[in-house]
Image (tube, rainbow, N blue to C red; front, side, top):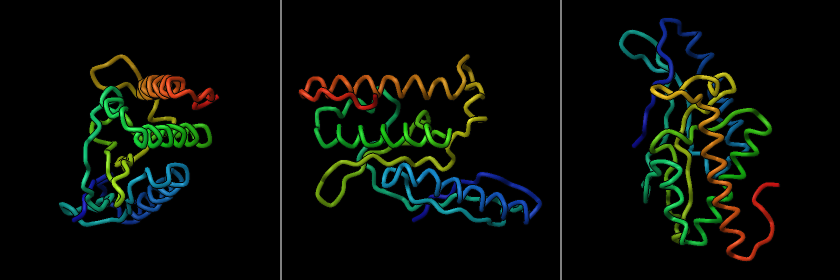
Length: 178
């Protein structure tokens, strides 16, 4: 079964095709940094209500848990493999931002899920289909005074502090990011 997400709706078929290609390239760029943390997504156009819809298509996955926010993400910290996965995703997001200026949407409830592989090892998967561009990061969050980029940065700071504390407690002297 597939998950469909309509990203753009237009009367112009050529514009829809161009938008689909643009989103596919953006997805691939993010995947270069996020690797297996980035959910498989493809883009295309589909007729919808007499218009052309740019759709993001993702295979449905069986998630063990849906992360509802940064505080919830830290609730699973008693499992060493989970901490490794949390660190891997954190570093991947930091590298993506440092090299491209984009962030995956880690603010949306349910955009990060916990999955298990065939050996029962936990994994974190980002289901977001549209990463936040530098321009998008300047927009205010509805009903809040903060902009998207600042809220993502705040959440990543909490995440990084947690990982560094976990490393100290385990006897590892190296911080997650220097």
